[in-house]
Image (cartoon, rainbow, N blue to C red; front, side):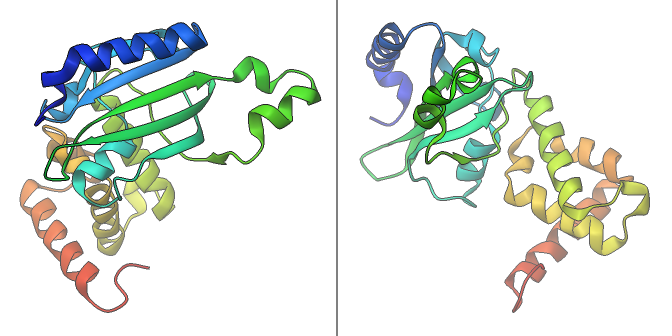
Length: 219
């Protein structure tokens, strides 16, 4: 199998089976990474949980793995949050081809918001041992880019108007590591955000790669 779509019926039936077992609060998403970055979702059940549909993009975690800056190890039982504040318990499982290359993912997102506000007897069941991970669920790849830019700015701790050249290089480095440049036309938005030209963007990107390879790298 070289793409998820070759076995789409199998993955679709599996998604339906999981959601039938766990109900309307359980979303199952199937991603095919042979598709464009902005439309990797090829199957989804109970998409109302994160507000997504077939043809929508993946999350920031998937981008990092596609970029190669994060290991493609399966993630089980982690906690994340939707744009409207719903708390999800999630699992992401990555599908590989015969050569061991990741070609897609199946992700389970279970809305535990109501359980989290229930009595203390339920809290140990829903929260014990869970580690929070920041993951962005969006229906538009531009929203995903906005999230990555905001996270990078929070790391630097300054608005663009107060950033030095080194700050901007660090922002570009962070965005590159998060896979932002895999998003179509991301360069234009980043240039506008930092008030720099495309030439300067490419120059800063090269400088960031040099700094990364030097001893110590970025602080």
